[in-house]
Amino acid sequence: MRVRLLDATIDCLVEYGYAGTTTTRVADRAGVTRGAQVHHFPTKADLVTSAVRHLAQKRTEVAMAELDRLRAAGDPVGDALQLMWEMHQGPVFSATVELWVASRTDPELRGQMAAVEPIAAAGLVEFGKALLPEHAEHHEFLHAVYTAMDVVRGILIASWATRDQEELEARWERARRHLRLLFTTLMATV
Image 1 (tube, rainbow, N blue to C red):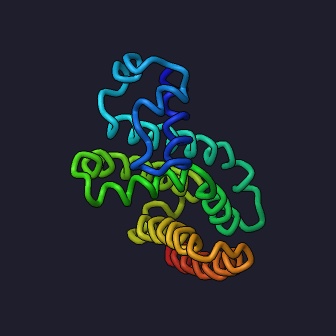
Image 2 (cartoon, rainbow, N blue to C red):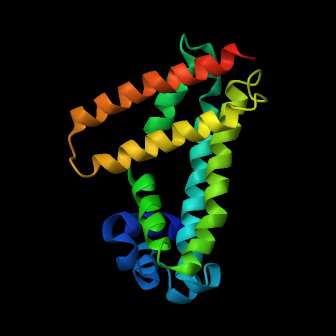
């Protein structure tokens, strides 16, 4: 029941935005009673941030399942960056952005998101450390991972203004080239 509620929450965030995502709508979509929803998630903020946390954990599991393939790749850094890009595509990222924007003016949600965001980022950092363990202790490693994540997010958010897929891919390829240089430079100093 919990997973159905979390999945229904993401669907509602994508379809209706944060303002249009109500606990009643989520319960209906999940096929559960409002009482059952309240039992698991007492507030809307609890519900939506739990959904993002749940999906961030699933994303980390998917990435970790790719470790062996990436380690054997001819370009593990470039391929890992591509995986990060692909994992930020779609409804999960759209739902997360909805919550970031809504948290600007909703103090309860902002508090919840402040707790969730480090969890989501930590999964990405752990993946990077597992992929490149010999470089993970470099003092700039964490900054490079966060920079890559910020670049991916920024390009995707900016792309919503034009919806031009060719431009989006060109911007990503340019950024990926520069991010690969960043990681190559960092790895050469260890």
